[in-house]
Each structure stands twice: as C-alpha cells, then as structure tokens.
Amino acid sequence: MARFMERGALSDLSDLPEAERILPEIQGLVDQYASYPGRTSVLPYSVMAASVIYNKDIFEEQGLEVPTTYSELIEVCDQLKAAGIDPFYATFKDPWTVSQGWFDYTVGGSIDVAGFYDELNALGTEVGPDSPVSFESTMTESVTRMTELASNYTNADAGSRGYGDGNVAFAEGKAAMYLQGPWALGEIAKTNPDAQLGMFPLPMTENADDREVRVNIDLAAWIPEASKHKEEAREFLQYLFQPDVINAYNAAQLGFGTTIDADPVTDPRLVELQPYYESAAFYQGPSKAIPLTIPTENYMQGLVTGGASVDSTLSTLDADWARLALRQ
Image (cartoon, rainbow, N blue to C red; front, side, top):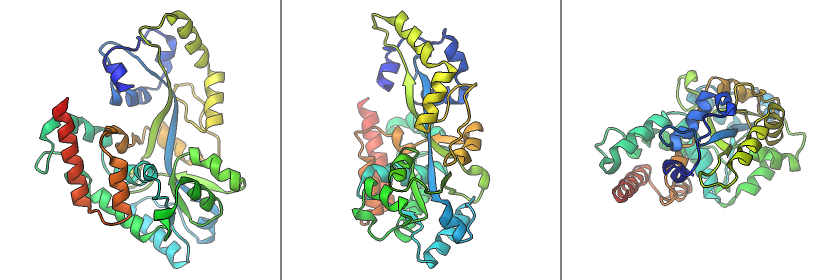
C-alpha cells in the first residue's frame, strides 16, 4: 500500500467531509507509512489495539495489581512463578507471535518508535554501530529484556507451541498473561466464554507515564486514481463512514473508532485500553516498519528459542537495513 500512496496511484479524498472527521493522531499513523504531496489518499476505518491480555481471576487470587513499571512487572512475574503459575504463555513455534507481541511490545514500550524510524530512514546506508540511532544501539536494552522475560517467565514448552495452542491454553488458565491482540479474544472465548480477561500495556520502563499500547490500522478506505467509478466509490465510502455503520463495525470487530465522533469501546476486555487510545499513548509495531525482505520474525524467534545473541542479531538488522537502503 505504501508504494501505491507514494506514487500517487490513490485518489485524493481530502475534499470529503469524512476526511475532516478522522482523528488527527490516527491519520498521522497513515502518514508514518507513506503519503503523496497534497493528498489524503487513505482514510482509516478501524484500529486494533494490542497489549497484554491478562487473567483477572488469577490476578485476584494471587493478590496482584496490574503492573505500571518494569520492576513491578518483574515482581508480578516472580510472585506468579513462586505460586507455580506460568506468568506468560508463549507460542514461539509461530515466529509472527514473537515479532508482533514480544518484540513489538518490549521495544514499543521503551522507545519512540516513529521518531526512531524517521532518523533511521534519514540515515539510509549510514546505519551502523556508530550512527546516532541503529537497531543495535537503540534497541539492545529493550530486546535484552525481551529475552530475559522469555527465558525466565514463560511455559517450558513455548518453543513447540503455536498460536492456536496458546489460545486454548490461555483459555484454560494455564498462564496469567498472554502477549496478543484483540483478534485472540474470540478464539479464547471458543474454549472458555466466561473467562474474565482484561488488557494492559506492557510496562518497560520505571516511568508509569511511558506506558503505551501497540496499534495497527486494521481497515482503511481508499479509491484508486484509475478507477472508472470514482463517484460511485465516493458515495459508498460516505455510506460506510456513517456513525451507525462504522460504530457497529468496530464494536463487532473489537476495534477502536477512527473518527472524532466515534463511540468508545464498551467490551469489558478492552475498556482498560480506552484511556491510552484517547490520549494517543500508542505506537505502531516496530516490526511492521521493517521491510518483509528482512526476516525480522525469524531473527526474533532465534533470540527467544536460544542460540542467537542480542548484539549480533541487532547488528545483522542494521546491516540488512543499510543494504536495502543502498538498493533504493
């Protein structure tokens, strides 16, 4: 999609009243991917907010509060472990779950993701160990903490468990926390529809104000410049953005609204994230800003399943990034 936007293949929607209803901070998420001078090419329709899914019953039984700092998180994990409960259920067999959850949450919870990639893009081929920012120099502490959490506070069979296994196991109460998004809630409910679940951002610093949730634009509207039915498409877009239509969609899909008049989420599993969304305390997953030609998911899987070192992995990411920049 970014390539289409950059090349002007999508028509301008800025003159539509619906464009004025989009929350500026949400439209800004689109601009982090790409833009075309003088155009609003894409209108966000639904945003997914992902963070730590936690079992409220286990937390209550163990007398635990939702952690707000990294040290509090470690205390919660230690108390759960002492009680014979796996703090996190991990599914390292599926590399995307490592990248989307473990890498994105730990890094996104501790650095300015958008600012980092702005600087990285500006550096281009100059990215390396001595550059102002790099994967190795900027993310080492965060990724090291990721590996420590993964090695000390997850289920023993994490390396052989995939996404489907995780949904069932978490529904059965086999761990207190699960690094997934709202898309997992429906799957968990198939096994345990009465599970008492909530969500909170993974705290990665000692400042509670640093907590943010990972978001992604799950659905957006655009119209190709080459469309032979632009007017009809614009009319349909306006229908889709009617409050009763867009609000109903997001409520059904566990999404967050993108417009200034959007209804807040009411699902009890999501409501704890609403204040973060309203205050724009969110980031797009850092793994999603890395081109797919770089095997980030596999790199992260290698870190949590053992054998790979943090320094060498992040150094490899820097080298991969510089090589791609050279080709462009």
